[in-house]
Length: 139
Image (cartoon, rainbow, N blue to C red; front, top):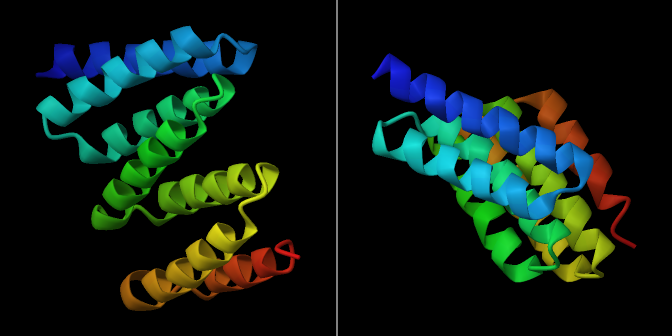
């Protein structure tokens, strides 16, 4: 199992490196492969991280709706695993993408849902303040 986890971590690292260079197709392939390996072996936190890379790479490929679906799956996993830091990172990325493409109403809905989820699951005042500050960018 440790070898497979190492392989999945390597795939995710390669995907992240490709994402950083703008090679979105390769980034998506490696990150998706990593997410699949992590999923098959029960490493859900790592699966969520890999899905975030895959989702962001899909956005880079102009596959916006598909990318947003993958990012939402990542958020769902991260919240279920109570991984606040990763959930907030993916949540913020998703809202930034939605803002870039002009889906401001969807950003507002996400922010409201984020406040509710934080209150119910994490009760983190810093996260609450961060989410509330994002409402100011939804004009």
